[in-house]
Image 1 (cartoon, rainbow, N blue to C red):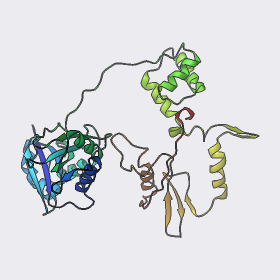
Image 2: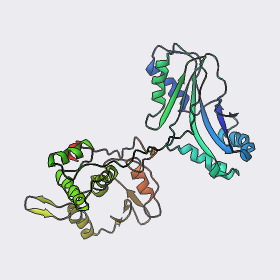
Image 3: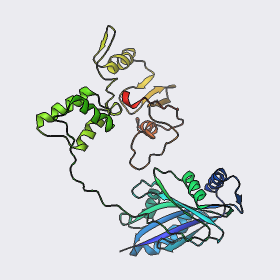
Image 4: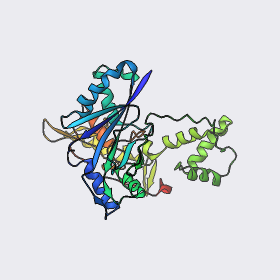
Length: 350
């Protein structure tokens, strides 16, 4: 059997810039006429599920690791309960949605493993509780402030007016898998117009020739593709995955390229064979020499914007990829800067 604990860390003073500052600024943006009665508070919250035999280790973990400072105190409560707040304080709780990657929880699990917990039998989720005493503050304004403190892609939040009891939404809840059965897409006997419509409405970004090729393949199999099969083909044939324009056959005036990328950029780089090009087209990023000892690993992608470097749950690329790729070049490079590149085009030209 396992038992659930909620650990709330109370800070005497947060480092700057702090979540307290974020809360104050968000509240003043949403409700400029607000009067904040005293400095707001931000409390990190850790939800732990541990086996019964590890319950005696929770208090030590809470104070020595989760609080981690004499200026902080860790309040451990059994179940999903938070410490009482002042009667004049409103509260906002922001926590990761179920199933979303929670990087902080991974660090806590590592510490638990080092502290003798049965790591594989433990679960951890994290969040923040914001407390503010201010007047006037409406429930609608609190919800708007919560939206600025959280990220709707990965977070859920709950607001409580002054005097309203906090009800914690179970951070460990799961959802049953949907079992709707196989969904087939009718391709075998449809017109070219319908083929293109299927691509456009499904966001497949496949042109008519590609859709015809898929139809012909499944006509040979004597069946329609499932929805996931069609999605998989579209993803595999996407510009992102296979660079079908750069590596495709292109005619430009009298010039004809069988593979434009290999016959232009690749070819001239290999022909010049500059000695200061230490690694080209064979690792996760290119490397050029600064001197005999130091080189620069550099990666550019059209879709990696440095404003969102931390991948959210389920995202393995598109966010942070240029850092991931330089880290994975050679024996590993040390990231020192980002370039700001973000290119896009109308979806119907993809």
